[in-house]
Length: 407
Image (cartoon, rainbow, N blue to C red):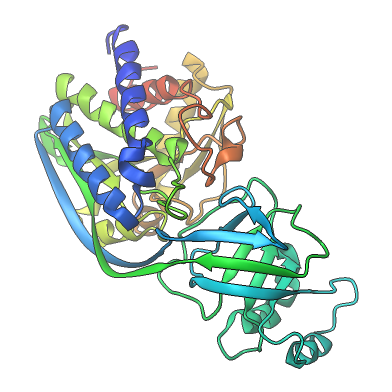
């Protein structure tokens, strides 16, 4: 690779990240079709990059969304969505004024709790409790969240800030509203007023975007992946940009396609932008169940997820068949000094490499954790101002060096 290429790649990388995290795509979620619009944009970018073919791989999901009203006040004090409260991804909407019941965690007694909730003054209340306490008494709290389980209207959980928003379990809707609030939620408030709308999308069609650059040989291939979907909207006015998670990985995959379209590879190269990752890895799971190539042909798969951070130690996860390749990457990194270290963590179902790892594909996840940007993960502050662009070039050089055999 010529020495001038990374600077140009960085310009392209920044431009794609900025565009994908802009209001035009509304957080690349399912409400307002942000994810579909983003998929079309990515397909166009692959074509401009010079890919030999670009295809959409459609699939459907059921997903809960919050594109409408998003209001909450405590004893008349207005709370701000995303900062003071968020909805659990499988929560229904809520409309009304509710009394608050503060759970006694120090002297907790489940029988007394449910007896209290039967009292006239407590029926239809929202139970307030620290979220981490629920792990010790998960059966009781499942009952509090279940329609007909108890006469409370729902639950409010305090959660560390900045508040996180999720989609992983949004394929269903719970029986009662579930609201996460910041730790400074009043400890002695009387009531809350809530006006929140949800919209459950059944059979929503979204697509993986698959680009290919032809190599000289077709018996094996390399695969670069990143998910482009994100969290979408929390109400009418707030969207989650997802610059680091994962416009960063998506943009890197597009620039890698551009690199290999010019520097023709020995083997076929696939570049895949997955949808549905935030919804429990639905896109990558669909891909491995309907692969455009035999999975056994994959020499190595690189999954880029949240690479827009500044930790000099690069976190990775590696499948068992990918270990020999990882050792080669460590040697390249040691020789060329891209990162202080490649820290291998336990393989987990936390990103799109997992369905491939389950099927014995040699693969690696790059995820730059614990830098300055990671604190904004799954918050509306994950934008181009809070992410770092410094990790892009080292990862680009490391993976192209691995493929090209350059120490």
